Image (cartoon, rainbow, N blue to C red; front, side, top):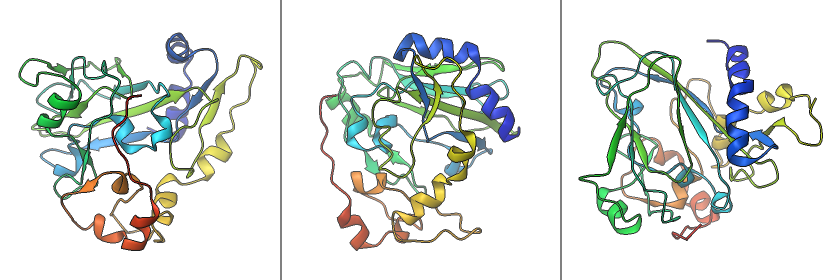
Length: 256
């Protein structure tokens, strides 16, 4: 899949029409999007329980950010489809995440924390979401979700694309802004892909911790590592200096 194909999908008229029903006629693409290669039995590609707002600055909590999770082949429980926690967004709360899961850079939620703060029943409220090729899973930025392990013998490819109103902060710590895709004031708005793609999100994340990104460096770092208590250090967290950590603000769960 080329970047041009991703651009066409992200701005697909039918997709934007659906998003418009949720957030209104002014639509921006969020700077955090991913093409995921979920290789079999790989911890680094298995994302634990989290809310998407857990990766963003607190000023994003008041903003609805719909995400389309789009598998590029049939997804199911065997090859690592998504699971979500039914009703986990209804309290409007952001639960206390931890960092980092295993040997990864992911934030994570414990089941105990979700039950306490989000008032869900983890024995009853988990929903598996298999999606056939050509379909998508549309979810908001407050719903707890995770991906299952890939126990198949094939790579499970997927895209996650996000949108929000361009009139509020995207919550990406000032590292990169969103991309205007639809405007009520200008129906013929020209999408400025060159500027958007000209800024490398991952390199900006590395710069934010005072580290230049080597082209062969496979570590991932970012400001979300400061938002939450680091309960497990690994090669990713070791790239963050104490000075940098102290410069990022702390987080406390709030009602959005």
